[in-house]
Image (cartoon, rainbow, N blue to C red; front, side, top):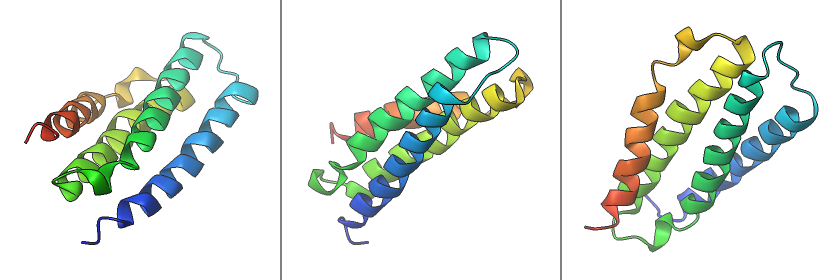
Length: 111
């Protein structure tokens, strides 16, 4: 796999992060304000780890680092967005796996 492909993944993820973050800041009005915080957490982790994706081509194992970050974004942030949008925590099952994927991505830089 071409390591520079991760820049394209970061571009798509970055557009999604900004769009979802803007929606959360300006349009998202949950009945329970706690879910606004859940949305903000999803947006923060989404954007931070998207920025980290830009460094994937510079790592020893770009596919592992980029793949784990992408998995983390989808599983953690995606779950948080869903929980917030539906205002129902029963959909939070994948969030811990996303968190583990984020940790594993950063740990992969050690090797």
